[in-house]
Image (cartoon, rainbow, N blue to C red; front, side):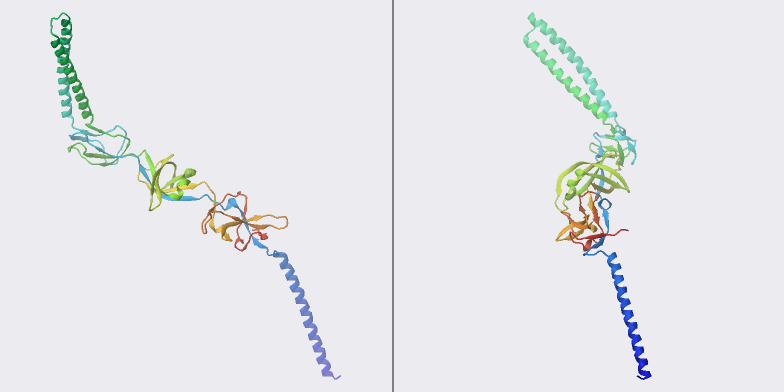
Length: 362
């Protein structure tokens, strides 16, 4: 064999040896990597998930409805007699107490009328006493037949007639006293003067409006509640939110009249502690005493809405689908499971019922 051919043969043998060694090394490296991967990634269609206790996910829903605080009494006080206004003692915005005098009317004519009636009664009392004396005397004389029975009957009739006149005058006296009391316009309840409609020196007639008085103590909240929430009011805690402050309420009455278009019912709620002023506009928050899970944790399987719970098995934990009855897609749902139940959070979209899972830790 010549020298050039021997050199070429040695070169080829060396190249083949290097290629063979590199192939064996690559196979060993690939085998080591695959073993390492198999150790880190769960097998048998196992999916890695994270879980949280149900108590960390649920919330108590709050429904909000526009509402307004209303006074139980908003009265316009009117005159009951015809008279001249002699004095107005209050201004718009004044706070007044029950029984406080707000307006004085000129009362001289009514006081004189009472004095005249009293004088008439005094004269009539004298006539009545004399008629009684005559009747009693004629009754005695009738026994001795000194007077006729007709005279005795006439005197008895006179006594009855005068007694009726005395009773009529007594009624006039009471009416005169009533008119005198109406010369003072008093507050029928404690409140605030909203509007003063008359001024000193004006003449008023019966039914003339004089003052608008608003009760600031007896205040309730009126709200239009959707029919779907009416039944929840009996087992909820409502609050009136006004200027970012909560005022606790209690249900007083549900007006038995449904507005057919809006499907609402009027509800009256009473303040249980502090109160707002009348005509305060705010929101009624209805805190429902039930637990709901947010919609983003709910999945759909076989046209059913529910969540995946972690069930621990001896060999490996699995995912169990729990149906949430009456749940709607895209909405939170009521849930009544124990609060320590473990809910699968991440990885739930790829799960099926009974599938093995691997729990990842943070």
